[in-house]
Length: 402
Image (cartoon, rainbow, N blue to C red; front, side, top):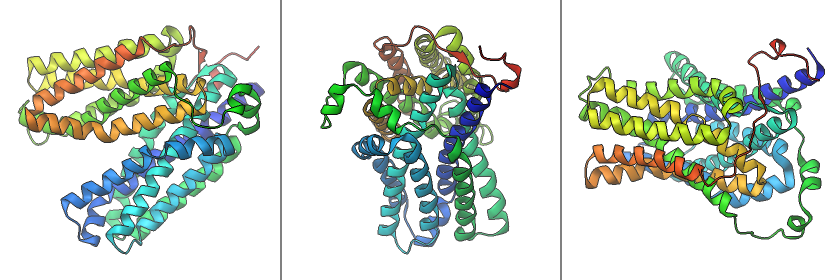
């Protein structure tokens, strides 16, 4: 194996570990919300506020992330924020009351916002440095982290219901992953400062985002609205409108998730062949039209096929938009990530308001429309004309670099 491929693979695995950490940490504490509810004697509204507080922390972290990215660089920021997420798990295992829990989850959201920007900046830098597409595969490891967290939660809770044991073990695993990943992360602080235009170096204050950055942010908002709404409302739609049985209702989430993971594994090759712009435009249009057709036809099988179109179509949207935003600089990446978090936070609630005012059918129509809006936004983004070669699953199978 050539030294170049060795270095690429090492950094790819290290950055992938960051994505896995984020998915693992989030799914770990969310899986124990019932235990937190029982221990703190919380009501449904209080649980809803807990979940919203985490999202608010991530959404409002944009100014902080921008400053930290400039001062620390994505490598150090990703390590520190990942360690904070492990500390959040330890804190959640001993929180004495509801107000402290709200504070801890607000901190969790801010750390999520920091890690989200930093790890995507690392992924974009990896693609640029080695001229290989890999961002979609990195995003697939986020889903893998969520799956691993679910398996760990199931195993630990079958042995003991103690939060301290579960969260302590999870925090230790996160720490090991972060420490092991750190040497393979890309050093970017001084290099980014040197490459930054002189005009930007002189203007450290607030700078209005460009039109292209705003279009990227809108694409991210509507893309995450589509993702979040499918996760929150697909089971209820299958049960109440497609008349699926109790055993089939959860299959909506499963179909969307499996299609997204599979698509992200192969999406880097598609990006190389067709380009990011075409992938985002075509994929989001497929998601919107596929879901709209399924809603018009009705029935369990057409609905599941429509959900599969959504998972397949939106899988590469966030990886491609993150790469495009990273090319505009850390400020653009931070803003786009914050807008994406806002969409993920507000999307399911907005669909709920639409469903409450009309019906869930029209709420799902709004989800299909959101996917179509992503395709429209993608036409306004300046995508690169050609993508670098896709990173092979096993770099030993690739030819030596010239």
